Length: 337
Ligand SMILES: Cc1cc2ncn([C@H]3O[C@H](COP(=O)(O)O)[C@@H](O)[C@H]3O)c2cc1C
Ligand SMILES: O=C(O)c1cccnc1
Image 1: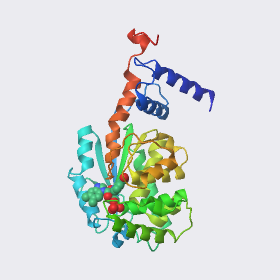
Image 2: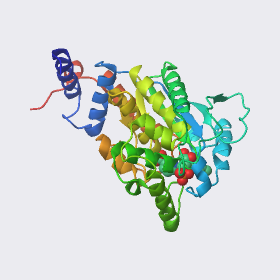
Image 3: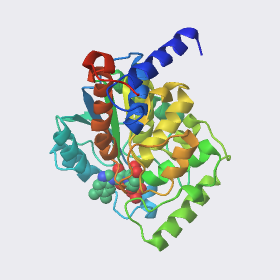
Image 4: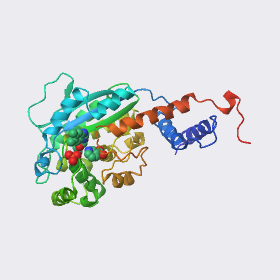
């Protein structure tokens, strides 16, 4: 740590402790405020604006029944996002957060809708149970699309969400290969498979994992197991972080994208704030590997950026605390006896 950095961290702790509250009384909000201050390298950080970007893409392996819902739901949900009816839209509206939706590779013909942005790589990935989900060029194109998207906008915070039937399977395989862990430990119910469905999913994914070495780089894991929406999100996370934005990481799938982003651009994870602990079984393992303790635990397992959105008010309030709260000196309040 450089002296300037050490000085900054000391000044930051002093600023937090001199606010008109017992030392430490705002608990984890104090740590959150400190994290935001470090991201912005400012003792009076600003987190007033936020945007949600939803990345959508389909997965060839959905044909194996790895999800409780049919593949068509990806496309149908994209239309639902565009007409403002999904949970993510409702939360975003409630919180004054703008939403943009990106087609990274939804199956079928391209959806023609003015509000939908196209960063389509193909009409869904290949069947990753049997063969690579995409080729190296497609992976690089998706990452580059993401990096471009992550740089856009002047908002202080970025929430990233996803939609893609089958993408908990994709995320489990990617996480397994980045962590060198058995994929069976990272398999969960996704959209709500019953126990026999989870067993089938586990067997399929264990089989798919055998195709490749135990450990892969993020790029190779994305090539092998997909999806276009996860690769695009990972690219966006790296560049948004490098541009100084606060990146609010959603649930299981977004956390796996964050794991890829960390591998692709080491250091970018300094800007990540983990929103919530998803009920999806593998999430806790991936969070542990990242040393992350998320802000919320609401038993949610939806994705779309819904958890990230619910954490946004905490991020906003934590920054405002540091920026606006009076100190013992300025308010004439007596400090500890
Ligand atoms: C109606 C509906 C809305 C959703 N919004 C997000 N997901 C979530 O569920 C999917 C992942 O689960 P799995 O791997 O089991 O398919 C993703 O699309 C994810 O965003 C949804 C799923 C459904 C059915
Ligand atoms: O936590 C998530 O991101 C998640 C969990 C289940 C289904 N879709 C998304």
